Image 1 (cartoon, rainbow, N blue to C red):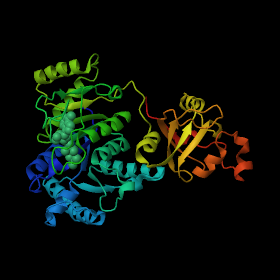
Image 2 (cartoon, rainbow, N blue to C red):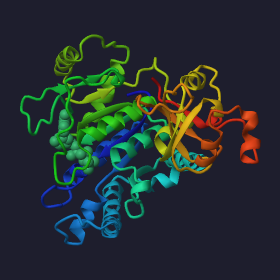
Image 3 (cartoon, protein in one colour):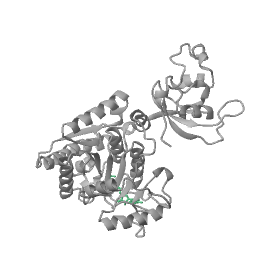
Image 4 (cartoon, helix red, strand yellow):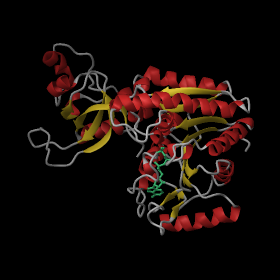
Length: 416
Ligand SMILES: Nc1ncnc2c1ncn2[C@@H]1O[C@H](COP(=O)(O)OP(=O)(O)OP(=O)(O)O)[C@@H](O)[C@H]1O
């Protein structure tokens, strides 16, 4: 490996804690530490996203089951997180490798300046040769500010740091056409050249693998989509042999110019043959194609860092103007209606809707969520100025902060 890469490695609870005894999987953690240290020594920058705080807390406090009440879960997380980071620190200290604990909630990146600050801190740690160990701040996060699962958190961390690779380490070898635990005929999915095309013939609905696992494959696909939209190649692999990361990165590098065309299932057979011939371990790779538009930092932040508080229904004309190359701002004239309650500069979904002949929203026809916006006016105000020309804003609201409902810098659309 010649070029230095930024690599985010996400470990699920199932890789760190035994599902039945809740004892730590120390040998596996040690293998991961050895791999990460080796990656660092050849110049790569590595970030670990580590789950397991709650699982470790349960064991420490002698609790059989995850409590139901939020304050109890958060207390358990507070106890477990300390122990967990202590274990990482101890193992890395045998190699004189420094680590840093970074606990995040959505609130910590809710402002653009905070988002940039999180990015700068992580970059600074990497520049110092430190390995950031990131986790959701389960002790403080309430549902509204939850990332929900560490798969998404790892994708956001990868986008935030402009990573090259995101490795999602789990307790199966790769994504399969169905849950391999319940369906022995499930076939491996080894390469996904364009996730936007969907995954026909693949089912991920069948739950998690263990008591301590949370998201199953579903959240990994969401994470893969977030990450490839930001230009990060995403890999699902088994945590049992972390040193496979070397071989997989080498293989991806060597096959960078390879084009994948044709039926998805046929591609898998060809890929399996190639992996077997070269002795590369099974894994699923979601390719972040260089040809596609990748979200810029600010767009990524709006689409994936923020929580939406409502929606604005826009018409076709507005959608065309907002998504053309020289992107326009959203004028009140293109707003058909408003849903939910939001304040100035809170984030909302943009939905493409249809008008009735009288200009009102035709709720009989389906709407499609097309992007996000941060509005210059609160929901009740947008509702009063919708459909109007901007020069009437002052007359209707008694003031006018902007001719736009949302400025073009405060609009974001996924790269489709
Ligand atoms: N199509 C599929 N292919 C592969 N695994 C699947 C599929 N559908 C469901 N699964 C299940 O997803 C599980 C992996 O996800 P899980 O959330 O349990 O692990 P994790 O990500 O390692 O842990 P955590 O959720 O704590 O981060 C597998 O053990 C498997 O049982």
